[in-house]
Length: 561
Image 1 (cartoon, rainbow, N blue to C red):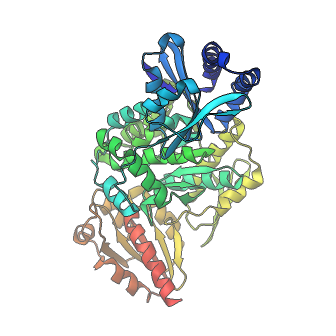
Image 2 (cartoon, rainbow, N blue to C red; image 1 turned 90 degrees about the vertical axis):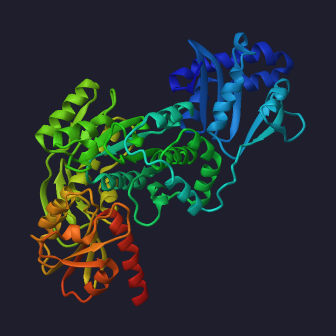
Image 3 (cartoon, one colour; image 1 turned 45 degrees about the horizontal axis):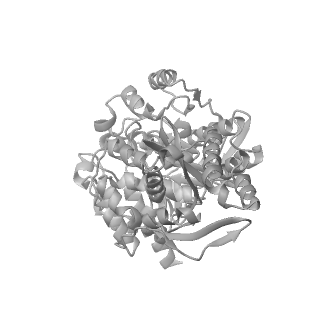
């Protein structure tokens, strides 16, 4: 027997089953007012409205046909539970209720018809009050207290537990099985899925800023993070709070262990449940690694996108641009449009072939025109728009242009209402920390998470307009750091190589090779000394490095202010 979330076109069949069972088995015990009240609650238009507003989800049990339905209201109330009479006594109701419970945490409430009270008691529910009658409907208020491990009392404990799980870098079978057994709640979200080598987070943030400016409630899932791991999941740019993630961990820890989920899979799952609970209008998921086998590829998007293709993570994704494009193209799904900002013809050919195989519309970002830049802002023309960005990073032109294409698709296909002024204001107001971010004015100090060869090339194009440059750099050992440092030395001969505390960080000696660079293993000392520089200081490389540098600089600023 298959249990899954019902879609809108299945509501009529579900309502008919509910009404048939009600009229046959329950209505004879009701007065006329109660019968009419009940039937009016289950008309198709009303149920569809509740589902659209994300107040209601319905699970259906199928044995070739629909044989049972359970409704869940706001992820905390059982709204209804009905089983086809020919399947009653076969534990269909028990299975539906078990599936519903898995999607809920905390106290679960149900107003049971008196005849079903014994069933709910057998499933762990308890009476809250005596039998009541409202508008002719007789019911017994009952509550179920979700199983709670009570293992975690603070977020540090949760983080340590999640981080200790298996680091399954590139597989999806366990997670797919887990989500399928959870009835695939991710299908309830309106999701935009963004992959690519560089610029995923920036593109996500531009889309988020515009949609939020227009009044939508927007969820984002992005990595890595700069301050706290909680930042990986946000709603309207506010990260999940400690107490909420503790609740999810205490509720689902045993299941995570049973299915042997990895850290990233656990975080994707928490994000999905967090976004559903808070009834977001859109959820934007940034791919973690690659595409096809990334944990985020569990989502069911309304649109997929790729920023660009670079030679990064070649040990997992392939050793040519085309191979990596094919792997990252694994997020392309049947009949779901795909947008890319990539320009290399070989990669575009791979994407086009994949889109043809999946019957997906293939959309390419148009050429950007008339780029004008100064130290703190950039403007350009795209299609009919004159765009101004509050950044000195030239590479953000490409990321914001991709965001525009995605937003225009949503607008043109009826997903959103968006006027031109809001689009331009949202782009202008967007700020993405750690990407060409000015963190100090005296001296001018800019941090940029240019974490791979292509990232450094993009950084170079933005940094070359400055004079008297000093660079502080560190990176991970699996990057093409030789090419990265070669490029940095084209900007200046004042390059300092540092180390930072991270298990994948490269040593300063191996980074430096035989390049004419300075080595200062202690990055804090390198930054302290850079305050005497008469010019601009760039701190760049791994985003994990930047995540340690950024709060340190702001702390220094606070102490001296």
